[in-house]
Amino acid sequence: MKLNATAKIIFFFVALFALALLVFHYAGIERITINRTQETKFFPLNVVEIVAEDCRICQRHNVFLSLLNKSNIKIYFQEVSYKSERGKQLIELLNITELPAVIIEENELDDNMYIYRSGKAYPLRWILDNYALHRETFYIVYPKEFDRSASVSLLIDENALQDCDANTLRIDIFADPFAESTIRSAALLLGLQKKFGKNYFDYYFVAATDSNVPVEMRRTAASFWHCAAEQYKLPEFQLFFYAVLCDALDKNYDEFKQILKSCQAKRFSTNDLYAITNTLDLNNQQFFDCLYEKGKFFSKSKKKAELFHIKFFPMAVINCKYKMPIAAIDRAICSIASLPPCRAAKENKSNV
Image (cartoon, rainbow, N blue to C red; front, side):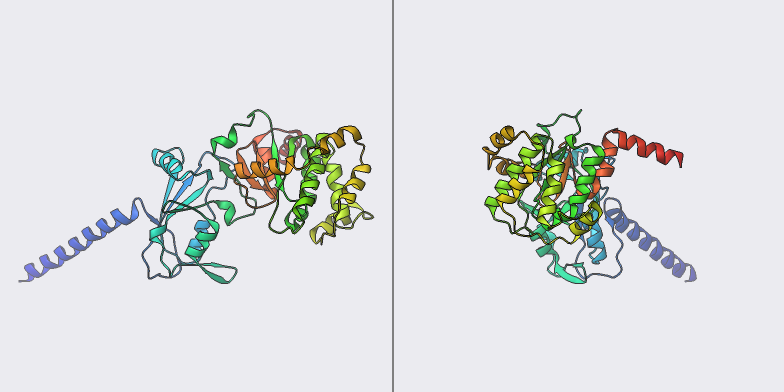
């Protein structure tokens, strides 16, 4: 009898161990559960992330994953390379245009799932409806929808790459100069042009949500910006533009930079634009011939922003391939091109 009891106990533990192995096989090999601080009542959410593992300057993972984790949402996570067969299929099926991208199936969402940001709770479904792309029965989340810091994403839309020369450094800036977000970044943008050379930068004038300037004024200003850039006078034009806009004409440059951080833009007129151009050493005939194209540059900028899927401003695209906030440009340029400021910084670092 003792032997039978012992055999039963052994059999029980063997069966329990086999069951644990089976559960581990299905839940642990292809699905990785991100750590959470408390249990949730709904089933885990299947999450797939497509990554560009060979992009040296790109954000490695989508910040949306950390939001799910911090909000105690249990997920089954799978990372897929954009070069793998499955990655290629998903990119084609869902028309994914940049990486990293997180994919979530709509029918897996539970109404009890909430995202916590800045001390407030938002339904996950509402967050995805407002910030993610909805294609078929899937949501696609790109990094910039949730993280506007110094992260870099890789553009993989072939249409965006057609107009680019891989051997020439090109930095496209998408901005609304009247918007507070752009005004706050103005000193940084001026500094980048001075550091790397203004000829590498091209500006696209777009309408941001935090700007209430009439469309006609934006169109006019877009023409002035473009025509100043055509004569390689854009940094000088920008400097006076923001000095007038922020009522800082009589300030030194250090004071000017401080004013930009808290600038409340004053009323602006076409006369202000003409007054600015009169302070610059321009070929007036060439400039006014350029202005006859008024309105063309604004629509061109809008189309370009749509091509690169730009939604937040200011934003930069380098070589039609890397999309990033303004704060990431400095580091990104030196990872892509070997310009004199980059070489100098590298030499100084090696000498320390």
